[in-house]
Image 1 (cartoon, rainbow, N blue to C red):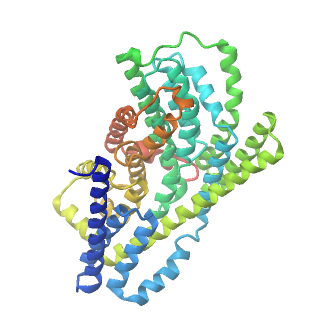
Image 2: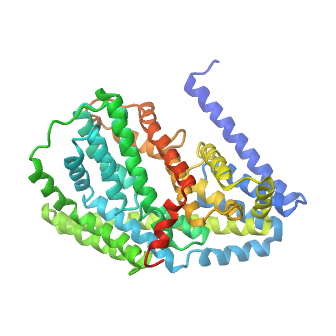
Image 3: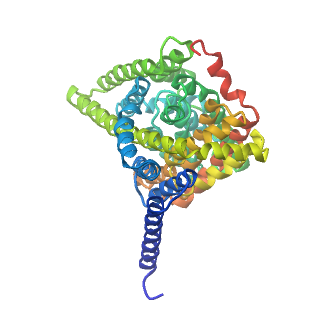
Length: 487
């Protein structure tokens, strides 16, 4: 090879891109130029969506483009144009979707005003005595923050900046330090308020409130399972997590730390308690939680001596982040609405349901197969793409074998968590690596991406074990929504 290795890799990447682009053009040309059955067009729409994603297009654009091309091929330009006119409004102009900006804004305010750091300090004071205590504290701090913020990235940044230096300073192995931070961040995906569960509820046409409640018990189980993994790691390899010899300040310091985390606990009570007791819809719970986060965040900044102008900048940044995040999510909703319409017209889900019923696959066998399918999809698709592309295809077949749509939402989000951690597209692992790559965070001890992936591997395996338990005991997911006073 005459070129340098980077140049050779660049040429290979260019050839792969050209191949995927050519395949996309051929698939599109086949839909428009050949006389194909509706089912064949439906299958080609799915293939084209995947190819467009591999080209690097945003998820919403990829699904929207492939879906409109499929509608054009099946019903002509008039249907494609009228669908775009109606779907862009009808799929997003729903009162239930107003919860999305509320949850995003609540999480942004908590992150920007610094309320999240108190959760780690409290958890460290109460749990630091355990084997791997600092990592266990990071894990449960993530659970606390997940119940008051739907922002996985916000949780990961807040915990990573504080806990990674603390663990490294205490002699923890970098693998355990970064792995526990990444695992704690994933809890924001399933413990309400979870944006992924809200997006799934909209795409699957299930009530948002019960869907959020369905994530509580699995989220708690995941937090406990992650903590058990950390403790087992620390017991098997004691050098990777030296034990703390006592908490400075003792019980008085522990009790004082509870006051610092009280605002976050109250926000959790407002959001989750309102949903469970039925005194607030998901949107109302989001509004009340956001207002509480705003009040507590401003008070927290004022107590630290921050001026009103600086507080205004923090709130402005929170609002801008909320606007961009909401717009991106609404584009996803429009894309999945068009794709769902194509799937309904093509009858692909019905044909797949007939195939599954005819093969006599039981509920458990089918779900175990889907774990493998989603693990493969997660190797080349991001989590939202993986979820939204498969929801329109799989809901009908799964209901045919008795899978509750609320339960399947939790299944999908747990698989999304695994995808967030595992290579090659484990976005959360890359975020943790970026945090840990900062000399101020790693204390001058470089941490490679390989170390991060090695650290998250046991937690990804733990999540899969919990998922199998949920398959065997589906009532763990569906019990709480059925028991809620608002259900």
